[in-house]
Length: 263
Image 1: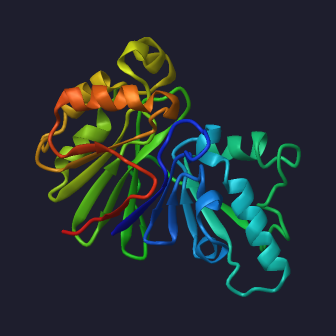
Image 2 (image 1 turned 180 degrees about the vertical axis):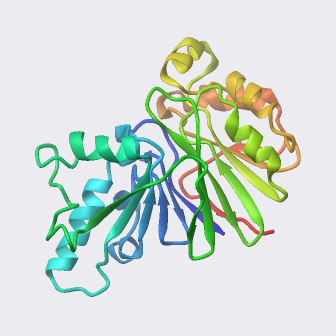
């Protein structure tokens, strides 16, 4: 399993990209920044987007992926196939009502035609496993102000947990602890410790909160832990606080990272 970090930040400043992870070149976990990072050729390989929730920093580039794909489709490019967006039904409904609504952005689920659209929507249920060419993806509900799922990724007997945006939660750690060959966890860590109240209000974690969550993980200290969703304007402060937690095999992600996960 190859996970390429396209964006891993919880805010957008010059040089900092919003959340998006490219798995095995064809699957996106969230779509905050793929068109800012990927070439048109790389974008054309994307077949699936697994959407954790509908906050703007996770859906923004759905608009521009669709736009770029539609131009290739109109030009008669055979490879310009549809992109399937997988999420909770509530999220898909909100995506259509508030984003792909022909007001904020064209409804690419009906362009060029509904039968042959650029975007296709497919709902999943929490803890329902979807198999994409040997990559098994299981959504798991987490705590956030809007409906949100993290994901368990499983390929060739190796598992990875991506918490998505979350505050203090339980079920995803129960499932993580059930995995026989868990190799890595990617966990929210958005605000510095002096913003604990803001983190709780917005459904995110500070370094101290992240430490409390990781205490629920049986393999803490044995496997890799990666932090994402850091606010770039407080990155230096957060780096010091994360270091002070002294958690083995833990580091902040950067948007040039590429993770190779093997059993």
